[in-house]
Length: 194
Image 1 (cartoon, helix red, strand yellow):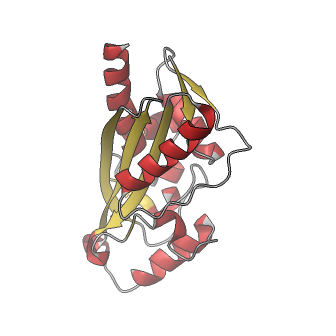
Image 2 (tube, rainbow, N blue to C red; image 1 turned 90 degrees about the horizontal axis):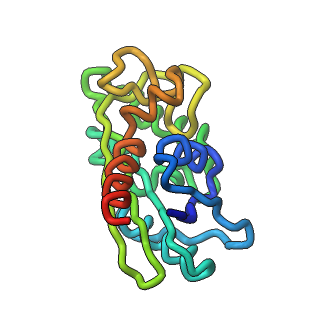
């Protein structure tokens, strides 16, 4: 089974390749596809926009995701705006800096958060399936580690106490991560129906 990845993020594409089983071949998003505006109010909406945008150009089945970091004391922010938290052209470092400044006076005990990924697989006839993956944890006081990408250096997953996602191996992260859980669930459905 072949799916085109809707992501233009090389880190995310690599992670998806590592997680999906060998029976599902993940093809890269064609470089000629322009940036897709992600202006939906939720993760499912953004994942669907990306899937539709790529499917209309390629005519092939597409897998797309959207991920949000949801911080309890910030009422779920940055959430759907995670990639653009510090502005439309923000880099990961800018987003991390803004989030840590928002949490500057918040003690560790109140820094609960979760990463949530929603995945959509869309076929040319516009049938689709979805899956969601969640991992709970806390936001660190400062960035730690240099592995991973995005907010990984400040996210302390509950299942690996004392370490951020940026301090653990890809295989450890993929086993418990939000994206890993969503991709494993969607792969089970795909392999069952293929």
